[in-house]
Image (cartoon, rainbow, N blue to C red; front, side):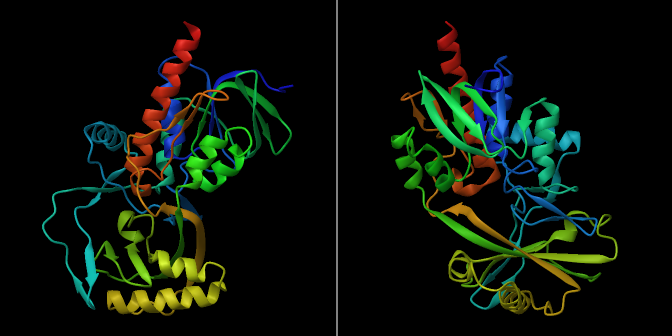
Length: 341
């Protein structure tokens, strides 16, 4: 029997998609609860507080191409949640580093870190989030959902929205919703090894470097997002390529960091070999091999109403996550409205 009061919609995962689904549901007056296994909000829009410095070790920036998301970003910008960071990145190809071409498309970042997106969404919309509440069991019970947390608490919900990484969602739904689990298993995910390295303050003439290099796919000048907060320091964030990440996911930290710093230094034509400090983040499920439609939110009626969403839509981008959550929240809301009528 549930140990907590019943809710209209349970949402698993407090990434951007899960939070936006809750925003949509809240606007209709429905009672939604978001369950997040960690303390933080925003999923891979993640920031680590590192020796007092905010450092983005997950998603590095975001763009806004659809009219709906541009409107949302305009609100975030007006509120001070994010700001325009740059309009172009350097590119490393065929052994050469080139400056950005003319580009009128803004790239946005957050002065306090990308996790500010999740915090802002939850606070501005009074979203109920159960933090450090890992769901370990999902089953159907008389057309509704019964959920059990790792700490033993039990919940009952009429509808369910699942936004956690596909392999985790598939494992949760394997017995209760095999069709949905099969769909999630079809979404192949790539890992990403990310290194943050701190140096004494130095001048870099780029904000970010993108590449299809075999070892490094991204080099970010994290401190250029928040120069006043990184006073006296320069922090560089490096993302390994999918191939390097797969091959070295379980390798020793020092070995991974040494290889990535060496290659990134060659690409950026600057010495990155001796950072004052560094850390390695291993993202097991970073991005999908093949992107799905950003507005897509697969729905299932049996054994109880279920909607899938997440950042694996539209290439794992922030905008795709937001659009997916928006669609999922509206679909779940429509089902709840039909139930009430």
